[in-house]
Length: 42
Length: 240
Image 1 (cartoon, rainbow over the protein chains, first blue to last red):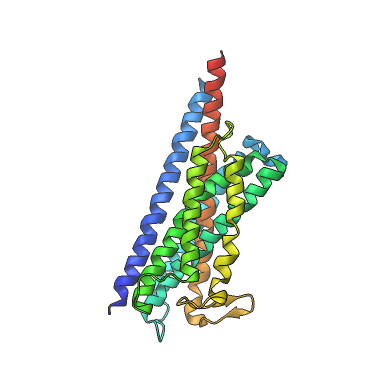
Image 2: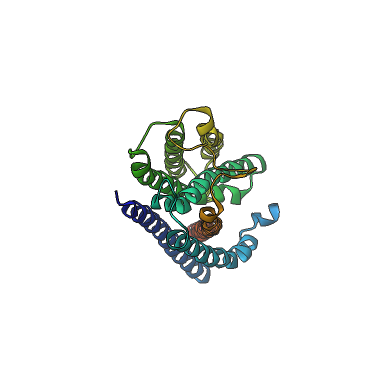
């Protein structure tokens, strides 16, 4: 049994999950803060 | 503690802290993962699958630490009525659920070549699955219940977070209390049963993922606070 296939699958799951949450959280923060700044100026 | 109830004071610290946690966290976890994949030797019994350790253990730690954080935030919210505690509880839920899911997925992938099965209804795996369901329930309850315009979680959701904490010691002790396919505690206060040549990158990934987790929680708290600001502004405009 090739163990590396399992190792790569585990790291890929982790990479995709952490990258997705990082992107969604960062984009949500940037959008919300830009909107708050615009609302503050209006 | 109430000094930070003022969002502007909190944001003054949270803004620079987000980057200070995120980038060193990312460097550490990438370095730890690369060392775990390329530098450390394979285990004499498990072979190369032991390398899943460097992501599985931090995921388990952060899944449990995340819910412990929710429980602490719930106490602070319910006892001291600290507005940021309610926001912190809400912000921890999504990354906590993510790491619990990663722990279950990587554990299952590790189990197939090691135990010959993807899943077994034993104490450790089942209690970890219960934790994932608790996170999903908490997120659903937080989204469904009224938030009093503060952007945090309702008192009912906070109580749910507090009651759910009973599962944390169950997860921790499950491999001691019940016969399990999962190995017993290999890292304790008295030391580790894992050989040092395999163990050392785990420190990098544990610290790296923890810093990254902190940065994501801060990002999500900043998002909620910014939305609160917009909501308050719209309400003022609506009142004229």
